Figure (tube, rainbow, N blue to C red):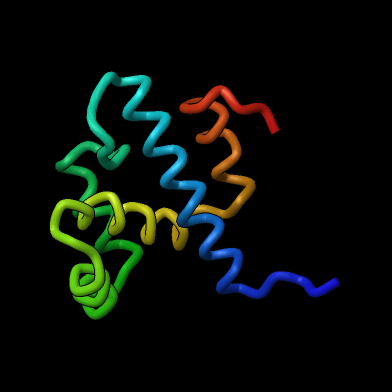
Length: 96
């Protein structure tokens, strides 16, 4: 079998983060939104993504998805799979 490349790992981290966002929204009784507080989201995104990447993401996704997509792309950069596991467990109750 083939091993996954870096892009595949990045995509998985991005999609796992969307799962965490969905669980967080359900747990908080809120709409699907970023996990980070609004004041923290901007700093987190800017610490992980270049201005060029932020512009590219905003050009690809509709405006109503900008914040959740920016957070998911930033989370995929910031966290390893091992770091995401406790977050997934905490928000979603999934034990891996």
